[in-house]
Length: 155
Image (cartoon, rainbow, N blue to C red; front, top):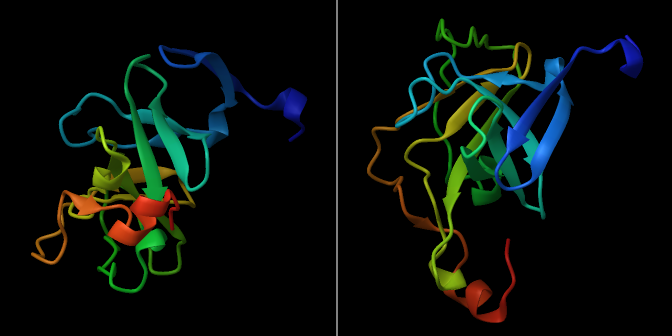
């Protein structure tokens, strides 16, 4: 299908104005995400690496800054929700794992939520937020080590 034949969706954002994206780029979270049960349709908008925006196409003011879970190395390892009927994730499917970033006043205090990652089945573009019952994962994991935040560098 050529770009001219792709079905486009236009939506408004409070941060960036109007966007048009191909319908095939939508990510659907059946049932929404924690705290936003009715918000199901999102797109990823590129930002400064390693950050992206996960933006609702139905709510102009709802957007999350996210980063790939792989940024946190091998210690961030958990079982993907293979077989979950909401996203139909199969063992052979590729999945993306995103974590939500919370920026605070001081750059060194920016955190990520490793306790509740977003898992997206790349085959069908359906996602869910998984709550991990493991005390080693926190909702406020520092994004940068103290040395990196002091120098202004990131991972």
